[in-house]
Length: 120
Image (cartoon, rainbow, N blue to C red; front, side, top):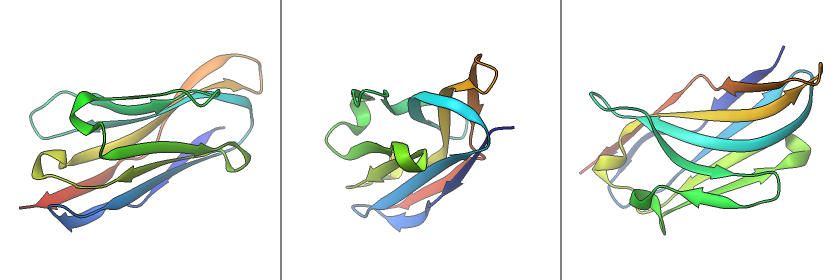
């Protein structure tokens, strides 16, 4: 059984910073892409940032230059450093891992979600 556990998030003023973490536990062979998604009230979930096993990254245009995604493969953990936060960044942030299970099958798993609120 694979489980993703998130930490970080909370309330911050505009211009502030927050760091999110997401760690995988359980049995799996490898983790391919790690990503962060967010969903604001009344809006569809969107991809914020993703990082491949090779370290290639991609970001939503709205966060480029402000957010940085990174990963620690030894800890099966992905991070999202969020700087210069804006009120429009307010959302529930969830991590998603694409991995190979111990049975050799691909699978996608989600973290529990964490609220990020940015006040103006």
